[in-house]
Amino acid sequence: MIALRKICKIYRRESLVNVKALSDIDIKIGKGEFVVIKGASGSGKTTLMNIIGFLDKPTGGEYRLNGNDVTRLSDRDISVMRGEKIGFVFQSFNLIKTKSSIENVMLPMLYSKEFPLDFRKLSIRKLEEVGLSHRLKHRPSELSGGEQQRVAIARALVNDPGIILADEPTGNLDSRTGIEIMSIFKSLNEAGKTIIIVTHEDFITSYAKRVITLRDGRLLSDTARDQ
Ligand SMILES: Nc1ncnc2c1ncn2[C@@H]1O[C@H](COP(=O)(O)OP(=O)(O)OP(=O)(O)O)[C@@H](O)[C@H]1O
Ligand SMILES: [Mg+2]
Image 1: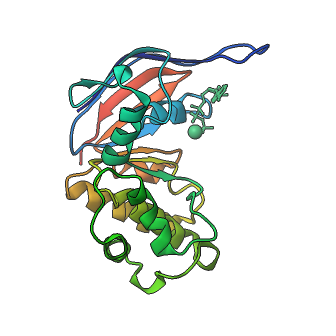
Image 2 (image 1 turned 90 degrees about the horizontal axis):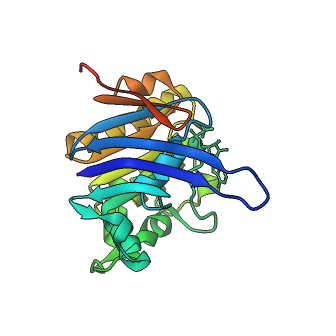
């Protein structure tokens, strides 16, 4: 489903040295996979996730999603595709501070092409799915870190994307809460979602069916894990 061929990314900065963040990355990820991406700080993990999630464009190579050449799409088509196909979860949750859990989860629907009939109901249902039915009207500052990440996961799920991308989703959580969050990703994967997680934490690798390691912007290894 996701097919990257010879993907390169060079960050060009005026009057600064160019950074070659990714070189010749070849990766195919099929529907329903559970992939962990590892590598030292600066090895290109976030850059790769941003390209997979259409938040950034490669400077070279080809990206096909379900057979479509993404590098040829217009910016508008790309943002529609991003909204429909991809859900994002970040280390720092990225919730809007002044909005309640329900309102935060509703946000992506405001940009989707097909407006669901009842935003609010759907938003509440997604919050129930991640175990937050008792925190619907709380603001992020009134929630624990694990609860904030659950809101972010509910928000990522609300457009029913096939692919969930998470960049260090447990990085700001204690280990017990991290395990709770990982069990949500596990059940999403069992329900058929493709999960791609960037992490430094070894315990997360035990959830993965496949581990990709980057070093200096190159693919160092790509191995299947025995379950
Ligand atoms: N916007 C940018 N402009 C210039 N260089 C950048 C930019 N973003 C990242 N880089 C550089 O590209 C390289 C890869 O960065 P990236 O953020 O992908 O690493 P990472 O593997 O996610 O690291 P970390 O584990 O610390 O999050 C680094 O050398 C970084 O300094
Ligand atoms: Mg990173």
